[in-house]
Amino acid sequence: MLPKREIWRRHKRNVYVTLGVFGSGYIFYKLYEAHRRRLSDLERELASERENDELLKAQMQSHFESIQRIADTTLPHAMIYLSNRVVEELDLLHLTGLPWHHQYSATTNYTSGSVKIH
Image (cartoon, rainbow, N blue to C red; front, top):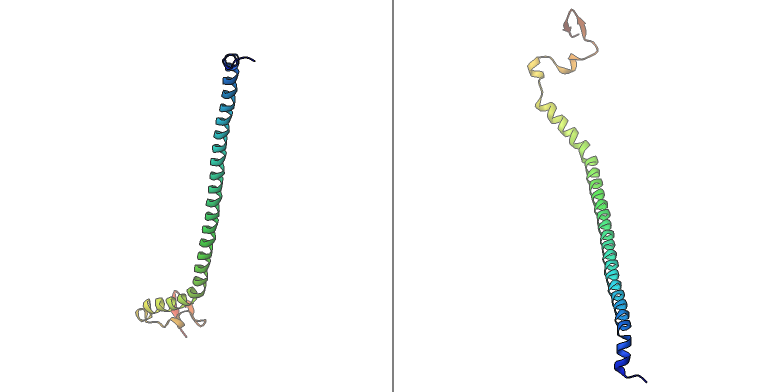
């Protein structure tokens, strides 16, 4: 049997090469695993952001539909009230001296540029 020093001297280079190959393989594996983990984290974060965006869009849509329903129910009533107020505020019949309902009645005659009321 050869002494230990003789075996080491003969196989020293092979042992270093083998350790270098296994060490570099281990390092590459760790780098690959870290990269893969980072990508999966980013994909998970992106999916979470998409879900949040969809939830936000759904909430905004619901909010605007609610506002639209409120506007559809209250706006017609408010328009009637506003139109009455505008008519009251802009009542110019006392300035013209003619009653408004007679001015555009069916019995109005238009002759020689003047208005005759029957």
